[in-house]
Amino acid sequence: MIRHAACDRSMKGRVRRLHHRATLRPAILQLVGFIMVALTPIAWSTSAIAVDWQPYEIGIANREAGRMRALAERLSKQNVFYQRHLAGVQKRDMHGPVNEIDRILEQLNRGSTYYSVAGPPNEQARLKLAAIDEAWIPVRKLALASPYDYLRRAQQFVPPESPRGDPLVLAGFDKLAARFISQVEKLMDVYYAECVKTNYQLCDVSRRSGQPTMLAERVMKEIVFIHAGIEPEKRGKRLAESVELFDSNWVGFGKASLYQAAVDPSRGEDGQFIAGLRKSIDRNWTTLRGEANLAMEGRVDEVDLAAMLTVQRSVVDEFERFVAVIGRFAAGGFGR
Image (cartoon, rainbow, N blue to C red; front, side, top):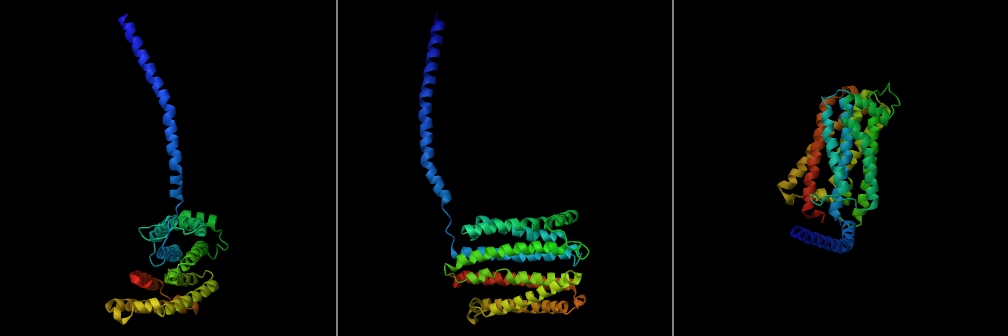
């Protein structure tokens, strides 16, 4: 009897607890539902807030985009050298530009407040970035492909029009890189349009970012195409255009107020250093331009490709340093 009474009490207690839980459950669910409803507008509004990118951050984004076009031209040049076994260029030399373009694309798509790189400032920029991503896929795959995969993928992306004259599909790779560069420059136009709305003084400088180094890479590449006998007339014309454009931009920048302020005698050694960099670039560019003239005159066999590749690399390295120094000077207050 005692055992049965104890069991009855235990059962009654369990029933009361279950009933209590059943009574609490709707109340708990109701409370959770209230919290979710209350938080939903907050969460939505947080995700909907766009970063208010500063003018200089849009300018830096344009500068980074400009670097991509130079890197893409470098890839095409490296591919020509590698596929034709010239100047000791190896496949791994192409990995660096690929990785750098990957990094820049990620920053441009997401933005980086830490590095002051603006994310897409509008829907048009997002669409242009999507087009760049699409154009980058075949270039990236070919740049990283093994020798066997290179030919297989090249036939997939760019069916060779003249295998006899271009069995390595060098012109095909170059077309893909040119398509990528074209998409990058369309994005740069969008950045520029947004930048000028703010009256930022360095919008035009940012828009030209990467162009001189791209042209230096292109000049060397076109010389090699002519040397290989691939589309010599077309390549000769592009070579002449590239040389002329580099010259006009380089001379024009020397007259720009930004450069003149940077080398003002009042800046002492800092100004002299920048002026010295320009003189060094002038010397190396004059050498490279002289070899380009030989190629355009039909004397490309007289060009020492390995020696000229070294000179061209010096032009690019010094120019990138020149841009970095000018950029630090501008960040000090000139462009604010």
